[in-house]
Amino acid sequence: MLVADDSRNRQHSIIGSYAAIGDSFTEGVGDPGPDGTFVGWADRFAVLLADQLPVLDAATGPAGDTHFRYANLAVRGRLLDQIVEEQVPRAKELAPDLVSFCAGGNDIIRPGTDPDDVAERFERAVADLTRSVGTVMVTTGFDTRGVPVLRHLRGKIATYTAHVRAIADRYDCPVLDLWSLRSVQDRRAWDGDRLHLSPEGHTRVALRAAQVLGIEVPADPDQAWPPQAQRGTLEVRRDDIHWAREYLVPWIGRRLRGESSGDHVAAKRPDLLPL
Image (cartoon, rainbow, N blue to C red; front, side):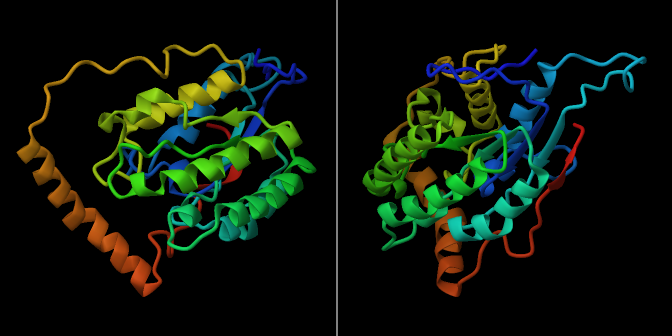
């Protein structure tokens, strides 16, 4: 049986439903499934949640049914205000036992944004959510010290992360701390675009999310990666040029045109449904 527990002795509760809200990170970009849709850490985390519930027998429900329900409202490219406007009301309407709320990252990486201002708006959304759902799990930013371009925004991301932690303390929210997840500092945890996690990176985040709620997981999310050969300077430079041509230039172009990768994209699981 699944119980949510942390160092502040959070009240034990069975989690029978879960809704994820956010942007491309929570949608699962970088982790393609066999049907062409993205899987991602939230889908993988939902499986870990469902696995902790007792399976009902034929006398109490359909064979193999845990009655666990999952919705994923996240859409790539969404800014914080868009998530608050489009996804938070739906999450409140669904009223699941657990909501994961990861937002603000796309705001922070935009030039001229103020992490203090983004955090104030994030806190208003957290306050709203906590009045309507069982538990709200918030997510920090990644440590971008090893990520080209984004390493220069490390100070802004760290400031926002500090705000998220303080907000979590004020509203008694469990924290999915990605900043301290050392395993995602390895480049193999990231997709070729260097902005989204690889399948293995998403898996490690899902394992850490389960740990946050006191769930026993099948592997250590911070387990060391296998050794690999050191790359030469020429190979690194060649990869950087390829990345800039294939990903950075198109990303800048969309920003200049006012476009988003999430234009015309809808949530992949807008309802609480069985896995």
